Image 1 (cartoon, rainbow, N blue to C red):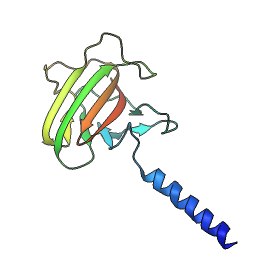
Image 2 (image 1 turned 45 degrees about the horizontal axis):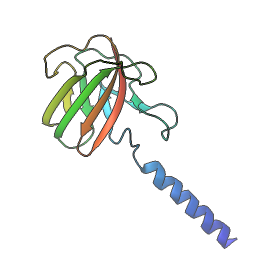
Image 3 (image 1 turned 90 degrees about the vertical axis):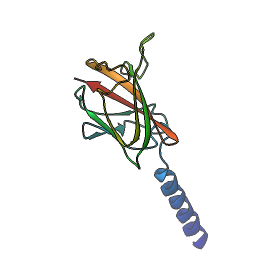
Image 4 (image 1 turned 135 degrees about the vertical axis):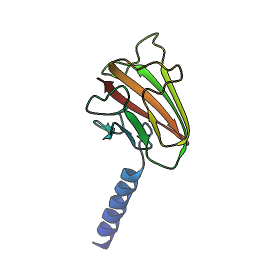
Length: 134
């Protein structure tokens, strides 16, 4: 009986330890327009987190953590997360912060309405987030 309890406790602690590990595609929390990106489906097979509701083209994007360098590449995409072939990304960069507005692109262009996949590089990780601009 003691062996069974010890094995059960070991299994339980192992599950908790793995649940606490961040997903490789979403290592830090991202919010856009106050909405938190969530992984939809199985985190082991997901390729992006998603903002459920459309956001404005000038929405504020925030990463969870201490101020630092943020680099964001925003690509037009389809529902499967496949980037539109030949599409140039919108690029956003900010230093010593955790926030940037979507309309602060390097070329000063606005992100048009549509579905997008963003690779958000911050600290030592990259979060992949899908969102819709209304």
